[in-house]
Image (tube, rainbow, N blue to C red; front, side, top):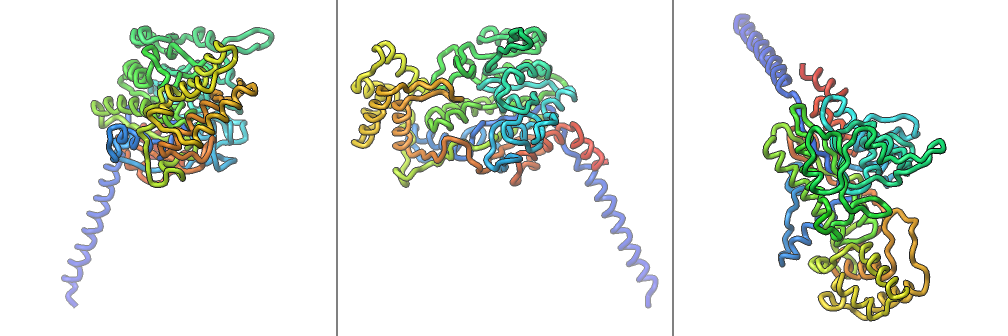
Length: 491
């Protein structure tokens, strides 16, 4: 046996093993997760895949095309999905889903920022980011003490604890709150009436509710609370985009101001919710939903402009807390045909049409003639001239007219805007003719899209659960246990 030759072979193998080991160590050292400085966390409340698809098809249809006109959110390079079930129910609600997105933990239905037994507070990603020195902004076009925004700063056993949630808002010390107002801000405490809005001012928040005042805000004014000048009387949410006039503040405008105020050397975390996508979907109001989603997407476009200036430091994540309405693009009536361009003839939200209808009835001593009804559904939904009505359509509207003016139809107790039979019928007829299908007036249990751009985006490129998102973002921000684990692995 040639021992010299055998020894040289062993030496060669040993040398190769050593090289591979050191090469692996070097590779491991180079695998450090990129550190993200700016985070945009977009939540389209109730926004399933079909909502975005319907909106893109609508844009194409109004231009005479059968192709999809891609939204900003569809252009993000990572497109995946996340499951949304709650700790105690498969079809989740906004409180449980919001808490899962904000904390990385499942919780029970109606619980805000606490464990499923409603006993222990859970620290949110916004709170962790703030503790780590990042400035924080919370934006929504519904009330700022509503379930989703509340999940990022509050800890309450019930989402309906609006006053208590509002009182916790300034305790967060987050620098920016913007969009809607505060629901149910007044409560008697120990015999004294307490106003949560006044508490905000007492705790040092600068309050503005018009465009000019918002544009004048400076960093020295932080923390700030910004609302639109016109809020819905009952909910204190922003109006639907279809009902805007020149005074309403868009989500893009509010986000633009938040970016300018929060940009700093350490970085920021901004959560923006398109809350009224969900509200319109609960009502099965297709045209209104589409305009809400378009406005939400414009805000994403503003974040992308910021990303272009800071591509190595900015993470943008777009998802939903759940799907609402069981929406389909296509229905049994239309079969393979779509006429989504018909939705452009709806010029106000269905709730606003209901308000217009009731106001006209008041002026007419409690009544509207059938002829006046047809004139109004033609004016606000295009039904009758631009959208032809069948015998069955007219029968449905006639029955709605008879029901509306034969019984007391007003009901002020609901969570969402009331709609009389006429507005509901007009909306349903238009949806059906356009080709939209709705299976529910509630949430569904289907997974929601997750769309991402920025450093570490590949971490989100698989089928996830909603509790996976926050730990991954924290890892990229180098915050908390997730970051410590990452740092120790990369040593």
